[in-house]
Structures are given as C-alpha cells and as structure tokens.
Length: 70
Image 1 (cartoon, rainbow, N blue to C red):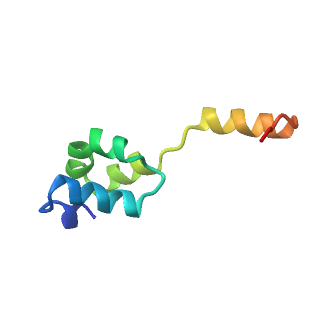
Image 2: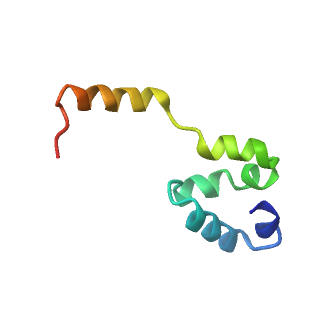
C-alpha cells in the first residue's frame, strides 16, 4: 500500500487508505499521513491494527453486567 500511494497526491492517497482501512477516520489519516507513508511495513501493521485493550475491557465488563443501552 505504501508503495502504491507514495506517488499520489495526499488527497488521493488519503481516500485510498480510508477505503482500505474504514476503521480509521480521515482526520486521523490526514494528521498521521507522513508517519503512515514513512514507516516500514511491519511497524505500520502494528500501528494500524493496535486496539485499545482498556476500552475493550470496559465495554466487555459493561456488557456482562447488562448495562448496555441503545
């Protein structure tokens, strides 16, 4: 992906990244664009797939207690 977007304009590259990684907001991609383009592929995979374990635990705990509301 990095090689494919390197020669594109930032606007086009951000659109392609957001299409392939819909869990990332366009504002996050814009803010971190240089970082995304320059990281080696293994480090980029870690950055893009990192989840917030604290948030996940809080949600799971709430769901177990029946506190989920719509």
